[in-house]
Image 1 (cartoon, one colour):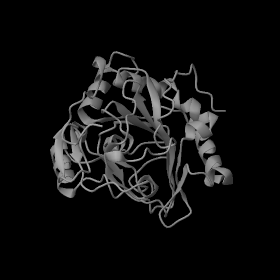
Image 2: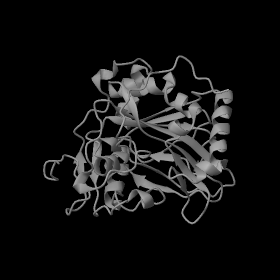
Image 3: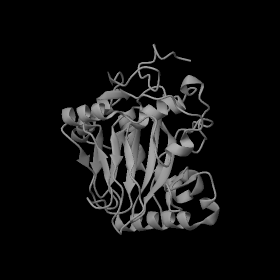
Image 4: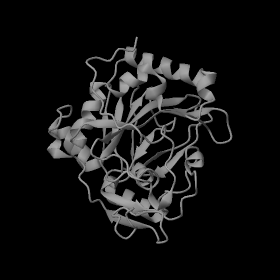
Length: 307
């Protein structure tokens, strides 16, 4: 196990918070492994740590995806599974994890060339699914996701070695200022925020509802936002997709509008960045949260067929 002193991204140790310069590339292999993005789009992703591709999926495709996610949220068998997470203080479904294993339609979505080839191009390798989930932010009840870097959690609690992973959020509903859209801090991916607090056992059971450890301190957040040019809100139509680096600071407000906000969330990790043991003797999180047992490279589909 790498000691905190030798770990370039040590976090949740007995030391205080810190801002650490990123040691890893953002775009690997000069972005030549695949050709899904233009050079201008690659430059934008490398600079900001995220990229919004609008109207990537048609209305018909979105309708098929929405129908599948709604079917899953109504299925009592799925609601009883550990993969299903409810809102704090409510029975409303917040997230369903490992959706690619629970739904053939969403398994095909994960292999859709419009998504997977972007991941392969940025990460410079073949990729596998570290995590998938459907996120629902129901009207009136959808709680916020506080500011965090996914990599901080994946590094500490899952043993992900380096920042060679990315997420994509497929918007299944229109995202506007009223329903708690994704917010990102441009340029924040170039700095790792070391957080304070020793991670409790089975932390995931609480953190998936409300995260309290691995949360950056207010001073670091303010510095990131001021240096990066503020906060960017991802407001776009259903069918758009947001790709963002695993270390980009992000969060979202609660949804007190009458209208739900939903998306399908895929985490692609490089086949050259598979997981080690979690840090500090923590027990590995369940397979539906962090793929550990079967690292299988995804093969792109020829064509997505939802209906």
